[in-house]
Image 1 (cartoon, helix red, strand yellow):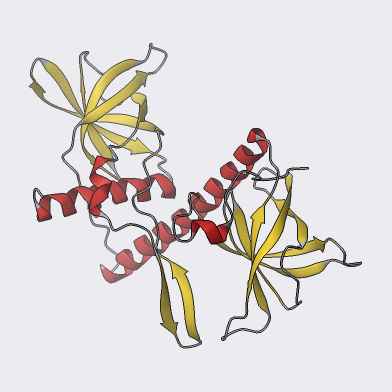
Image 2 (tube, one colour):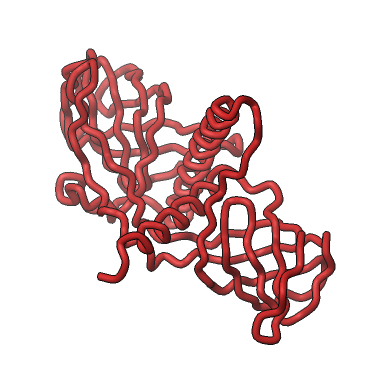
Length: 286
């Protein structure tokens, strides 16, 4: 059993300053409610490490303890327990929406939930990338075209070629398709490399802070959360192939490296970085 997040402050105290990324989903769940003889069925509509939001036709009291199982991508189940903090009645839909805060967790258990949420995010990102690429392909009359925007920012990278020891280098000219690798040793064209780097987060202040806002839909008003584009970048581990060699720079070798099997989430993170760099360049200093 996994009991989650006793130490997190209540949702009503955090307001719009939630510390955790909320992943939107539409997942039917059976919920055990303390004090009720039978399970309550509803739909999980978002989840984070700290809590979740549940939609159900059944009226429940605030402060009720609820439990449900989350089926994870690795085939295991997470047993989640929480307390109902809020209840709303959406104007456009029948039933009720409940804000639930998870209670009681070990660090390893919270890590398991965080990994599953990250997996959900990657799946959603991959689906969005696939849809965009399909739309671009159709708009271009079935012709492929270069769509990766490059960002000319230098940052450190660790790379490892085949069975050699890892070495330090620099990366620049990064896009969703690859980057320019600057290193101290000659590399063979066509060889594969393992790259480990963290994109610089300093450019992300160009994005507005996260917020919640009301959106008018054909079904009435709905409160939505603007994505947090300021969240820091996490370390990336990518496979790549050395494609070209460029003129040396300051006595160091320079290579064009293409990513191999980059997933949708990594592609979106690079796009978030390159877009932030572009905005910074457009707006200039200050």
